[in-house]
Length: 246
Image (cartoon, rainbow, N blue to C red; front, side):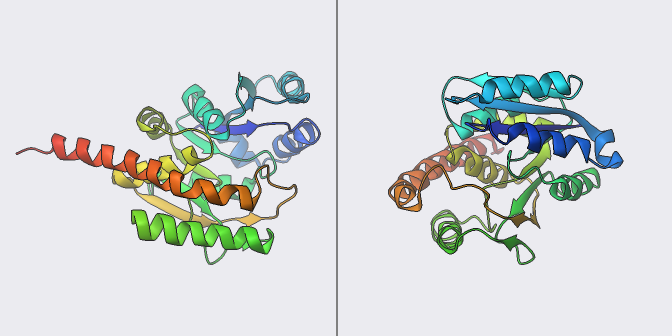
């Protein structure tokens, strides 16, 4: 087992170098043995993030790789990293949540074939979510009303940290039709639709910085987001129905 860690980065020049350095320098030996690469995917930054990424790559040349895309898009950055990954397994982490506990727990699950896809769920009963109340409420409503009631997804969360088999990551990228933040939800739903075993594990979340998009600005986009997800899943359902033997 060899892990590629994908980290999307956008306007992170201030704290990126210290967070990545601390992560790599304190990584336990067991995790270091399975770490193949850390892929920093800079996307549309307007500060010195790209230069910072290159400095980190120079400091850790055997581990860190830098990719860049011109547009600021979380989803496209994640997709780029997944496609560029060379490991047998892929983990998607956040630059302000380089969670060694999640990486270790998800690696153990994947290694034992207990699942093919692991999601760090903020809604897991054992999770500790210290984000502002309105953010926690929005997460709960989105996952229950839009994903569970309207789409039927049985899981509790689709955003945030993820680990999966490398071959599955490539396949999900090929099947996905969305971009931006919705992409991270789409790949979870696509995996579910394909019958992939998905396991949720707890995470500890503390919001260090303000989100780039406010709650008020997110709400009008939710309905369109659900429609896009439904369209993606219907397409896969039709493909599966066509492929079934008569």
